Amino acid sequence: MDEVEPNDGAPSRLPATNSNIRPGHALPFVAPSSYLRPKPKPRIPSVSEPTPMSPIDEEQLQGLKGLREFLQRRTSYDVLPLSFRLIVLDNDLLIKKSLNILIQNGIVSAPLWDSHTSRFAGLLTSTDYMNVIQYYCQFPNEIDNVEKFRLSSLRDIEKAIGVQTLETVSVHPSRPLYEACSRMLKSRARRIPLVDIDDETGRETVVSVITQYRILKFIAVNTEQYTSLLKKSVREIQLGTYKNLATCQMSDSVLDVINLMVVQNISAVPVVDKNNTVLNVFEAVDVIPCIKGGAYDELKSPIGEALCKRPEDFQGIYTCTEDDRLDAIFQTLRQSRVHRLVVIDDRQQLRGIISLSDILKYVLFYGEDVDYFSS
Image (cartoon, rainbow, N blue to C red; front, side, top):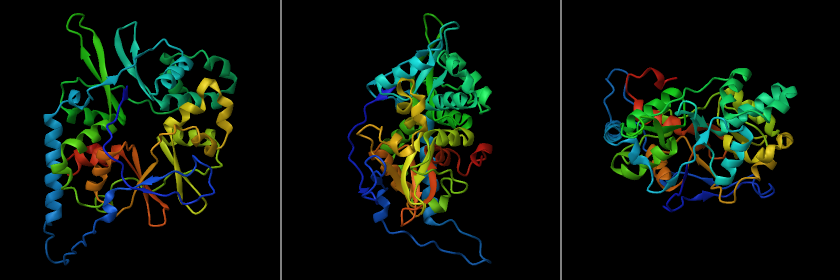
């Protein structure tokens, strides 16, 4: 599905830190607007007195409650833009041909369809291509067979290389948006197809696919009265991942980084220098242009060269600090196409990563008795 984003304005950008780095290596950094906002000093109660709920805590909970009620009222269908394209691929299609279709249409994922059972059969994403590459590395003698693999073979490839298979989930378009969010988070999927039943044939039909980004953008655009109440900082709500972060350098090969992403089940790796200064981020979608036309030999090239293959309209790396507030992050989501935030300090050194899953999980489940909030 390819969507056209409205021009809502661009947030401020920080200049690249190293002018000697080749174009495409160091890109503009985009930061939430709360850099310009004063940071409230937390009140520390004495040990003897009970901790009262501060006004900022009350506002935070009021905002989260409003967002959850909004997600319960609105349906998954409401998230769809007025105009979009949907490309559904048959499960019998060769994997190599599917790659060409994605590139030609400028998309990074597509629903799969089983023509034998007339049912939705899952989603094709950039992660699937990384798994194929990992299979090629683990079983180099199978290179001739790799060219013959069909999309129906993707689950067998996952089993062969020992990676966790994502649960195939979908949701009816008329179901509450809260349900779609919950299913995505529980299955660790970043997008979910909307599957309906045709009234005449009684068979499944794929209406569209919605992503975590599309949902959070929908929230940010339509609920500013609630997101403006989320004034606690990233540090205060412990948003994101800060330990055991996977990183790479410009000189590392694409193959090595793909192996890192597959083994750790992650979709992005920050690119840092020897001082841990963030230069860029290598994402799962960056793999697709690297293997265009089946050029697997190019995977031995360094990350720096792979990043130069990004489209010219690539917006840059979105960043924040641990002192930035959640309302500013939603303001950034409202204005720009954000897929993750790299948490940096004042010297642009890496501190952590905030994924869209982290934000969505906080909005839905913080303070709720949900087992998989802390997973």
